[in-house]
Image 1: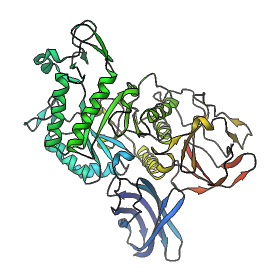
Image 2 (image 1 turned 90 degrees about the vertical axis):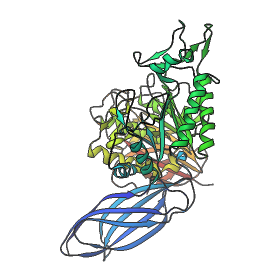
Image 3 (image 1 turned 60 degrees about the horizontal axis):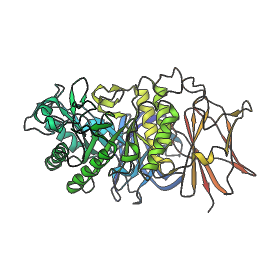
Image 4 (image 1 turned 60 degrees about the vertical axis):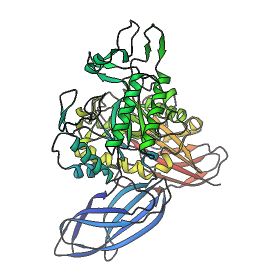
Length: 557
């Protein structure tokens, strides 16, 4: 019997799974078959390059679209990422179709944060469940509810619907419906707040609460749109806003507090004209907010926006579960994305790092290169959310739709990051500096050595290296042919793809046990073993490089 079938989507019921939770997977497929056909669905569960479980169940193809439900019971080890390789086979064992996916088992979402956003809260919004199901396909496990509140200084109101400071009509009922839908999928709901922003009307009621500039005038933001209040410990504004957080957490099901700042001013002056720096007061505010959150939500967290990486030295160690950085100049180059992440990891004592780096989804090559660098560096990227949209602007309601082609590529990239997080994710350590002089890449087509220099910002193959538990993960990121190293400047084409490459590594006295390769740039996300030679150097071949190849060396103990 002639059978034509394909697996279209692997859909999970949750963004991540807590230890002991069943994994409910729906395999969506489409087939053309005369009458009915009995086939088998095989699902292999893997951790990195090892298969850890396997199940098989009969399926009757009836033509057209079908949805097959599968329930898995993964190991309870946490935190840990897993891969899924799904195959449809005929009764004779012939391959019919394949699909690949991933999920992770975490004790809490902040162990491996994948942050997204919601920004549309109109009255009578429908389809909350469908909206959250779409975001679950990317395994987003935390959502920033952006500009959901009544006012920056009065977060809640008895009105419903209500009009916010920009004139948008919003609804508390919509917000609460979205929080419920998120929680059903193990997605945390984080309310946007501003650490020192208040309306001009509120400032006029409390003029002595404002932060003053060097001229002794109140600091204003956004062409007199808002006033900047004094966020120092013990100030009346700080007491007021912390009280607002208490009310928010008592009256809603939000999972913590997201704190924004505007990057400027970085200093204030008191009524006597004495200057003070804002870095330490902002860190103290994070700690105070963290204490309020913990009083209401023992598993809750605070997230603080370090705008343009400021003041990262003070806030990275403060009371937040992960470090959040909005990337602005002078961090303009692709390589800066890596440096910002590893610097924050170091300052935060190994905390996960999430970047807000805004890109137009029309610039597909920029998006994929940025995500390759961010994910390979152990970081996360807040970019996806509302309406299957992408953040192209710091004002989140200005998100832009992504094409079906980019959506498919991003699902592969997010699957890949989840699947291989134990080799490249936030629990691994940066090892790039120790390998820069120990690694060489040669084109087997030309025999030429390809530039991998640490100080080069373009036209190179860039090794990003992470270490963890007897493994070294080497991500080769392709920057060949790039004339502009600025991650925001549109790339006219993809990086120059390579043919086969020979990679040589000085093992530093260690003995390799196995080498394997995986990439998100094709449909097959599974790991494949590479042959290698071990003489003076560890040498192996990589078939090709488009955007991102991951090579993992497992060392003998």
